Length: 362
Image (cartoon, rainbow, N blue to C red; front, side):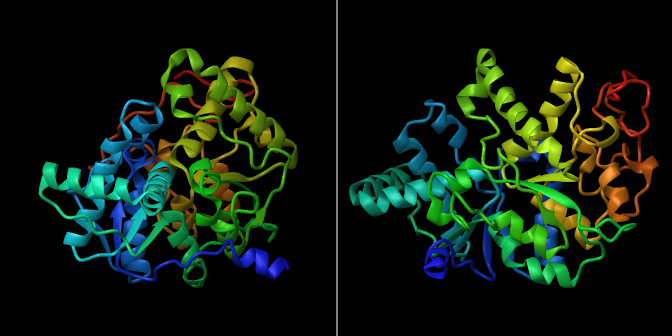
């Protein structure tokens, strides 16, 4: 029975020829992640992926905030699929968890209510003159990295292992709600046992930390954060998770949602400012990675080309545990080699030892 049940939570993932839809927000939070995903697929894995400049936001944030009507977002999504078809692709992959949830929801709505699909086709044609072509397969980009996890392991320069002790690094994996909880059967492992990130961690030598609030939401919720008066709710959720994981002493956190990765990283700074508390070793925070950044470190990419300097919590403790070679002086250099400036305040600045929780104004 276990095997039959587990089989229901697997998904067919296309092996090549992907139409890539970027995220509208994660390019601002962690811009190196999407660049790395494309380079990794093309250069390291030899796959064909189209990064189409014609595609747009899915408008998911506006939809979930009750600003964008259902018919409007359906027309926008229909345009995305039409662009995919015009480019000669049929395997649609989304960088954003919310977008993945939106595309899944709309495809399911069209299947259950064919009249909504017909209306979307008509609206698309009236607005753009394009014809809707639904994808043969839909996947989130973390599904793609999971799919190739063993190939990445075979090419690994570093592993998720303490280089000095040989012990597996302890990883907290956090799954975005819009990946596993809206349509559980569309995510690897469903909502209770999602394996998409855990599978990467284990294949690359790490150990997954189980803790009481492992499946608790980070608290993002668009209307919770977009309305300033509601922001106590998101931070309370992240605070609950961080308090719960801290006793298990994780070496890092990895998330597959742009909002979750951002909040679990930046709320650590906020909590340190508010309460003088940090959750990592030696008064430091717990480094937070996107799954692309985790894969990039394993493959030996330069940490600063991955954009790890964009994180609020310093990643140097993790790099040192993995034995990753990096240039500290290059952390805040731009693409032209010029100094771009250092944040005035940061959690666990690895050079700052002046306070209990290492927050130092420059």
